[in-house]
Amino acid sequence: MASEAESGIPLTHWATLVYGEYAPSMYALRCWIRKGRIQPPPQWVRGKWRVQPTASYQEHGASD
Image (tube, rainbow, N blue to C red):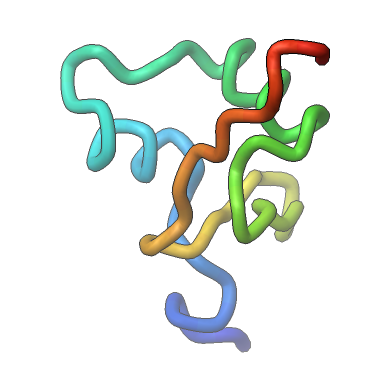
Protein backbone atom coordinates (compact mmCIF):
# COMPACT_ATOMS: atom_id res chain seq x y z
CA MET A 1 0.00 0.00 0.00
CA ALA A 2 1.36 3.44 -0.94
CA SER A 3 2.06 5.93 1.80
CA GLU A 4 0.52 9.41 1.82
CA ALA A 5 3.87 10.86 0.76
CA GLU A 6 3.84 8.66 -2.35
CA SER A 7 0.21 9.10 -3.35
CA GLY A 8 -0.38 12.66 -2.12
CA ILE A 9 -3.36 14.22 -0.37
CA PRO A 10 -6.95 14.55 -1.62
CA LEU A 11 -7.33 17.36 -4.15
CA THR A 12 -10.08 19.09 -2.17
CA HIS A 13 -7.90 19.04 0.96
CA TRP A 14 -5.04 20.64 -1.01
CA ALA A 15 -7.39 23.33 -2.32
CA THR A 16 -8.52 24.12 1.24
CA LEU A 17 -4.91 24.30 2.44
CA VAL A 18 -3.92 26.66 -0.37
CA TYR A 19 -7.05 28.81 -0.71
CA GLY A 20 -8.80 28.43 2.66
CA GLU A 21 -12.48 29.35 2.63
CA TYR A 22 -12.07 30.58 -0.97
CA ALA A 23 -11.09 27.15 -2.32
CA PRO A 24 -12.34 26.56 -5.87
CA SER A 25 -15.13 24.06 -6.53
CA MET A 26 -14.39 20.51 -7.61
CA TYR A 27 -15.62 21.50 -11.08
CA ALA A 28 -12.98 24.25 -11.29
CA LEU A 29 -10.28 21.94 -9.93
CA ARG A 30 -11.08 19.35 -12.63
CA CYS A 31 -10.83 22.10 -15.27
CA TRP A 32 -7.42 23.05 -13.88
CA ILE A 33 -6.31 19.39 -14.09
CA ARG A 34 -7.42 19.11 -17.74
CA LYS A 35 -5.57 22.33 -18.61
CA GLY A 36 -2.41 21.26 -16.77
CA ARG A 37 -2.57 24.17 -14.34
CA ILE A 38 -1.70 22.19 -11.18
CA GLN A 39 1.98 21.21 -11.03
CA PRO A 40 3.05 18.56 -10.34
CA PRO A 41 -0.12 17.12 -11.87
CA PRO A 42 -2.60 15.31 -9.62
CA GLN A 43 -2.92 11.54 -9.96
CA TRP A 44 -6.11 9.46 -10.08
CA VAL A 45 -5.66 6.96 -7.23
CA ARG A 46 -8.39 4.49 -6.22
CA GLY A 47 -11.16 6.64 -7.62
CA LYS A 48 -10.01 9.99 -6.21
CA TRP A 49 -7.75 12.81 -7.33
CA ARG A 50 -4.63 13.09 -5.16
CA VAL A 51 -1.95 15.76 -5.34
CA GLN A 52 1.38 16.44 -3.68
CA PRO A 53 1.05 18.88 -0.75
CA THR A 54 3.68 21.12 -2.37
CA ALA A 55 1.77 21.40 -5.66
CA SER A 56 0.87 24.84 -6.95
CA TYR A 57 -1.38 26.50 -9.50
CA GLN A 58 0.52 27.59 -12.60
CA GLU A 59 -1.05 30.39 -14.64
CA HIS A 60 -0.56 30.07 -18.38
CA GLY A 61 -0.52 32.81 -20.98
CA ALA A 62 -3.67 34.73 -21.89
CA SER A 63 -3.89 32.86 -25.20
CA ASP A 64 -5.45 29.72 -23.69
